[in-house]
Length: 156
Image (cartoon, rainbow, N blue to C red; front, top):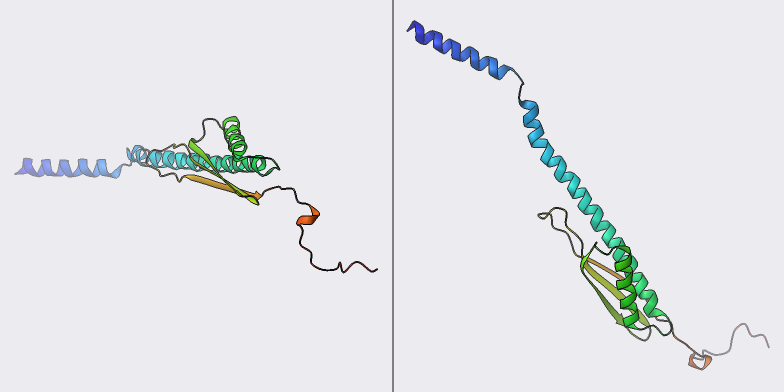
C-alpha cells in the first residue's frame, strides 16, 4: 500500500508541475491566431481588388458612353472603346467582361458586367455591374423648336 500511495503522490505532483507551467501556450495561440490573421488580410486584399475592378468598370462604361453619345457615334464604337479601356488599364483584372449598350435617339446607356478575381476561393465575390448613361448628341434646327408665343424679353 505504501508503494501505491507514493506512486499516486508522484503522479499528482507531476501533474501539478506540468499544469502549473505556461510552456506550450504561445505555440497554441500562434496556431489559432495566425490562420485567422492571414484570412483577415486576404479578405482585405479581396475587397481592395473588388473595389479597384468596380472603379475600372465604371471608367470603362463612361469611356464607352463618350464614344456612343457623340453626334455620329455608334453602339459598336462605344463597345470597342469600353473594351479597349478595360484591356489597356486592367487586362487581367476581370474575367468574362461584357459590354451592353442601349441607345435611343435621345439617350444612351452603357452597362459593363464582369467577374472580379478571387483571392480566397471560399469567400463569395459579387459580380460587378456598372452603368453610365447620358443624352445623345443630336443636331437640332430652329424649325424643330416649338413656338411658345412671343418672347417676353422682346420690348418692341
